[in-house]
Length: 94
Image 1 (tube, rainbow, N blue to C red):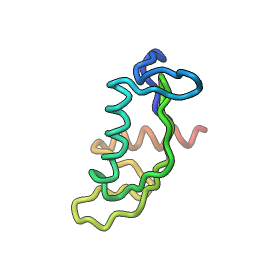
Image 2 (image 1 turned 30 degrees about the vertical axis):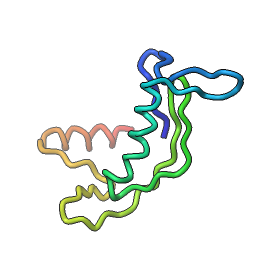
Image 3 (image 1 turned 135 degrees about the vertical axis):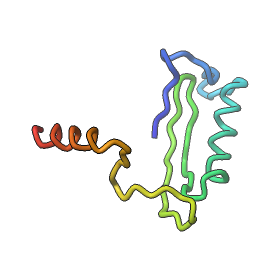
Image 4 (image 1 turned 30 degrees about the horizontal axis):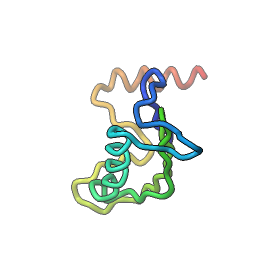
């Protein structure tokens, strides 16, 4: 996945002599990335890199067996059947 900073601002730090130097926001992004796998049992984190205005990371999503997990099976849950009908009609037109 790629996460970008709004308006391409260099919020995470700067590159100096070919190395990324994280500032406080960059350190927070780093810590939150590392914490994600502990918070979310259904994911595994792989390689990632934080750049001045974005970050790239590989997230492996596993099937969850937790009783309170949300499973969509590739479909979006919708509360309003009218919206559901409109969406299915618009897909048919494509």
